Length: 489
Image (cartoon, rainbow, N blue to C red; front, side):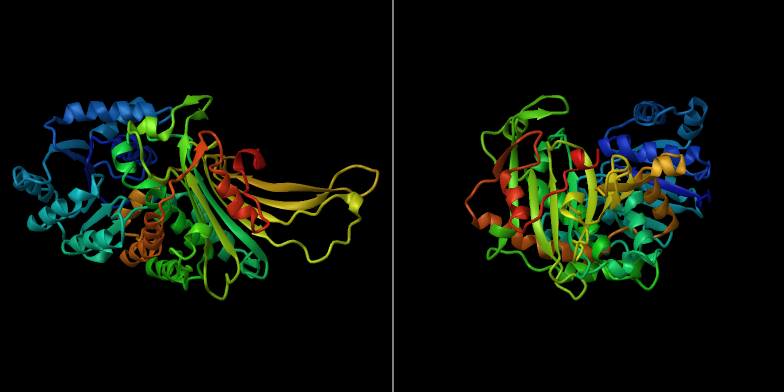
């Protein structure tokens, strides 16, 4: 594996859940695989005063919890790269020392990861600019949510742009770092088999599901002001839709790919108060069973008597262009669902005429299932003859490629790939400003339609696939959801 350039990675919010659960374990794995120069530094920044040693103890514990079979000697070697700096992003105190610390190591890439509340993005970027830390060797990484609507996203983008040029801004969506998402590009554009079929003449519909079994965890304050549409659809699901629906880019250059994704977002048929009631479903979970035990409902998790926040969303979206005219994209996401799974289902059309006798059994249309998690892989469902004598009987079976089984290794976490892409300056798997704003332009009218409709989110029992209205959404079109926990068993 190629070693990246020497760098300083500064994680604002370095003591937070994302840093400890994802970012630092991801960097350890890349270090253990030999991709990180040992003279690089990882600097955790937070308000509390702490020491390098105390912070390293926390990182050591995080690696032990989130990395299987971590080598003790390699962990200690990695921890020598880890440092801590106590700093309040909203105050001037300490910033001069912070500047001197970073500038003492010249000739290296500086990555500033804003693993903080979006309310701190502006303060951090302004101070990085004021202290001359936003030069050509700097990159800033911004986590979602980037705003809560188009207006607030524009404000954040404007403020970040005042400190960093767009080519230095990495808006991260970890779903784009998953192996299967990138394999979608390889499947479509590296094989003559699929691209001629990737259009409205051969594809009946597309389903994109991102399902979680967990409830609020520790995100109640944020989630109740966001909901599933803002938290998942505006970024993760729309990005996956773009990867499925985009035209072939001229190359894999970052802007060539992002130009094509932007065209998809701008081609989405509007959903507003005129059609939201038939094109969208929003739900909220009630008490039920999940992960093998009884769980409380959303209001009990939240500790409030009432809330109109959506914990489940299903949408029938349409891409209004030549390739996809008449092909619905069914999007579905929610909390407290039966399985933790993210997948894309490409449902092909039925054969135009069956030559088989009724006794052979039904002929199911082909479908391509791309599983993003938990076990990344690809399944192509085909019709074959069931083995044995006694006449021809048809059976639907999958050509199954599990990446872990096919390549004999576990796939790297998305953050491993994305963090090193930031160091390399590769923007391909990151969202451009106009993508974010185009996505909000499509989502905002849905939010407005829901606001004007007094109907509360439809209840669903925890451990089920959402409210019955979500089933009706797709079945009124003569289709049905591909329920991953049973269909892919």
